[in-house]
Length: 407
Ligand SMILES: Cc1cc2nc3c(=O)[nH]c(=O)nc-3n(C[C@H](O)[C@H](O)[C@H](O)COP(=O)(O)OP(=O)(O)OC[C@H]3O[C@@H](n4cnc5c(N)ncnc54)[C@H](O)[C@@H]3O)c2cc1C
Image: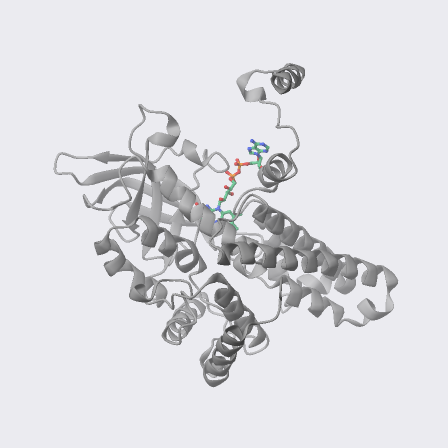
């Protein structure tokens, strides 16, 4: 594999870099002494900046041109991310919408839905949220209980609750997975819907995190009316539609930490700038371990990228990147806390958010235990977890497997 840009990629990179040089003065300042402080101001500024990026072709790089994208491949998307990071400006605000929900609508939505929703999403005029998880449906997503009932006039009535919904506090729309038929096996009775977040009966309640922010929410639906054509994809095909979203989530996470809200390599290098990282052998050793892990992830990300460029769908090995990035981030948070002491969590510290936010990422986008099981079974070929939920004791399961292997 050749890791250098082809002449076309080098030209694309130069164009992106030139655009950023010309426009980066308009980017909102989110860190340092001049950083914006007010949450509403930050969101408004980031929406405007997303609009600028979209105008410049730096948002929705892989979206088809007919929906406002550039129609380019995943390598160009990564080049664009790298250049945004290099220019030290924020990326788009609506990573969930543009990275995961927009591509789901492109794959499964009607022409009217694509026409209506995609352009304002890309430009940050309408931010979206992902209404999948519920109090009793996280890892076991197909267990969702939020009900959508079709009425005589074909419109829908929605009742139920979602949780951990990132950005719901300022989202215009949500893509929601609901149960439309409770009489069939759980994966077959689901349908995906577009929900206006200002519809009567929608209540958003923020969940305040240890970092002080309230970035995700509980969302309640009390007899919310949805139009007859609010479904994305066919009635009952919601599980397949959700898998498309989760595949795009996997791509976002598998290609590096920016999809998780921080640039891990930049972070690790920033730790290296501290005096003790150069003089204290223990700190140097720990930093070296973190950088080695992140470098390995970057190269396995390149392997996934090659597969994507050839039209392959990312497999379960993409989960390895997420597990490694999150654990390296936590190890980095511990290290910076050891280096700086209590100052690491001081009000003006640039590390407070990272140290307190990253542990939550062990759950986001697939929990560590689920991902490790998947990697163990489907990448490394290890024997499956004992199915204790089905009442089969571990030894019996192993005996059955041995029996099956003989035949
Ligand atoms: C920062 C953040 C942002 C999020 N944003 C969104 C969002 O925008 N929209 C959205 O819909 N959701 C969002 N989520 C929710 C996320 O998708 C869920 O947290 C995730 O699916 C796990 O579900 P859960 O939290 O219900 O945990 P559970 O599934 O209840 O798991 C609890 C624990 O049990 C373990 N466990 C569960 N089943 C098994 C098993 N079979 N084998 C071994 N261990 C198991 C898990 O690994 C975990 O440690 C977000 C979460 C976070 C942390």
